[in-house]
Length: 334
Image 1 (cartoon, one colour):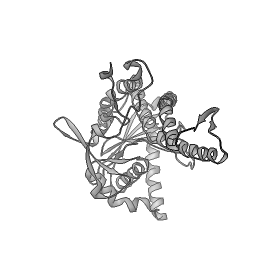
Image 2 (tube, helix red, strand yellow; image 1 turned 180 degrees about the vertical axis):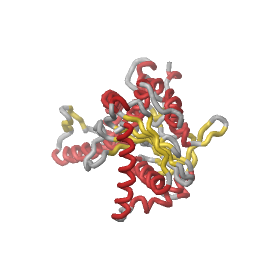
Image 3 (cartoon, rainbow, N blue to C red; image 1 turned 60 degrees about the vertical axis):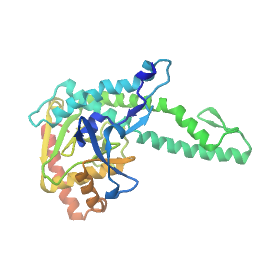
Image 4 (tube, one colour; image 1 turned 135 degrees about the vertical axis):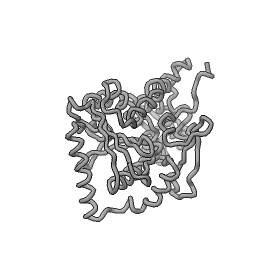
């Protein structure tokens, strides 16, 4: 039945966003800074019900509501409904070890959140729009009323460029979101074998994490060219304004059940805040999200964050980060 179908579908779970939000009468409200205008007076408060969503993004072709809602229900049942559980265990300082099931749930939640956001789809659609634009104008110049794309004949007869671009975008969406999930499931299988779980906590009161509408970041030590699906990547996710999760590849087998923790203060606390919030600013498609104090702090340090560090500062941060790596290696999480 039509009334069983969810039209407004969130690509960043509300169960995740609420930990950066304030609660009022059972509803949650989060501060949003548009990346199109990094100004303090542009910060707005939005219900988490009205951010990080797109109409029918996960709706699949099908004759029944059950068929059309299959992907939306999969994400809701397997990850969104489980998020509070993993949030509690990750932020509980007394939790020192995790089970196989807990490890797989943490890893699969982060990896699916990494792949299910709209930014990569938008980037692909922008690329294809440029490809179709070039093909369209070439057809006009040569008098043809069609062009071939990946072996398929695309007719332009009686259509504008905008119509053709829109039609391709709509037709390719189901295959795009299914491919996102397929890639995520393959990566989950690989990372579940050896990933270590590490949680960092900012101790200093004036240091806070922000998040965004594309919250999972990836990086790799001593590597200039990084691809998103490389299982050797470190995946990171801010959990709230004080906690950040790291998935560290290739933990020692006997130590992969250790839930490693590190409380950071002083220079390292400030540095980790700057680094993480800069990652979120570059990740974001439309909004950086979080507490107002954290967003305002980001704006105050934005220029400092983006300028190259003096050589002595680079050395200092490398030394501090190497100390973290040594502790992580000792625990077996990398």
